[in-house]
Length: 424
Image 1 (cartoon, rainbow, N blue to C red):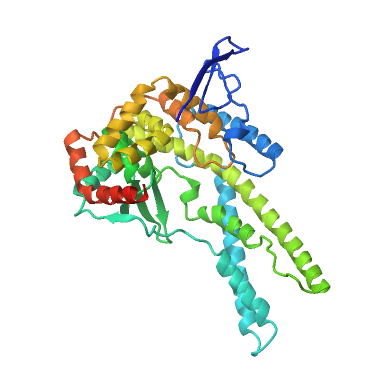
Image 2: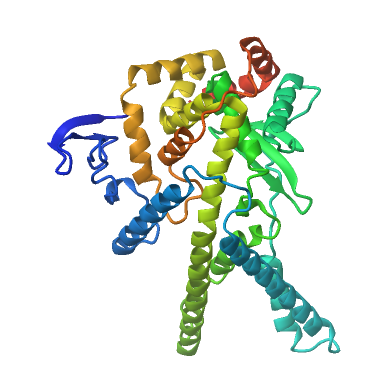
């Protein structure tokens, strides 16, 4: 539920009446006075210490705003920050080399001496550590319902048209899920391109927003996002895995004094190593994610190229109403209705509260600011599109074609309806 409060006080900067939504700290909608305020009641704790969380929020808010100012009105490109990318690649290669060295040295210790020998113990431990820290390039979600061209020719045809319009490759795998989400990514060493469409989101979107969603997700295959590159992805995962692996755990209970002292010293060593690795991971991610946010802006621009700016900004506004979408989908699904009623219910909800959208866009700039956010705040993404050259749609999804696509997914919609009914 969204609560709007207006007239709480006058802005000391411009005299306008402040406002609030979702019980947030009030701010001025006209000059955005106090929009940068830290709101502990609405933020998840990132570090656990309030003073650090407050400081990192302010750093993130300023960095996000500074990046927006630097990018607005300029070409977004696909290469991003050369320094950030070089640092990420170097870190990834260093981590992979370290893991390979662990495996080689450990393997040598196992086989270099006649069996049995004491060197086999550290050798096996080093090989096990190398296996635990190995780079992982993802795998196909086992819960993804994979579609084929024979089963959904209209949907695949639309994907082909959008890919051509933005100059992106078509995905190797297309599937649907029950999530209120959509994503595009690459899995495995072969970097198979995967597109997943969450049925609640896909079914709730009107025609133009569906094209925009495809344009944005397929845009991730060409926008230079460092999280998805073969040479950069390990940096995002391996340090975090190492920090978690070295996290101390209680292993000795009720033993002698020497055992307890040894256990305490071991856990202290693990704590120091774990924290050093964790801080290194945070620093690397904080640097690399600035480039990742630039890539998100570019994916939005590609969405506008495919669907037009109006549809692309409409999609962003729909993301701001994710809670309303979830409620509408669940209510209409439990009543036995399909995606046509989902769209109608969501449209009715938005039409009933037209004045709240601008406030939600502004609030997202505060709520979504983080050093570790993959996406820029939704409100800034909306502003970025609105400030760029207005684009007309290159791909138009007609009502008849949309009905045929939904008919192709009827079996999946029905499965989703049963899941919601059973869970409800």
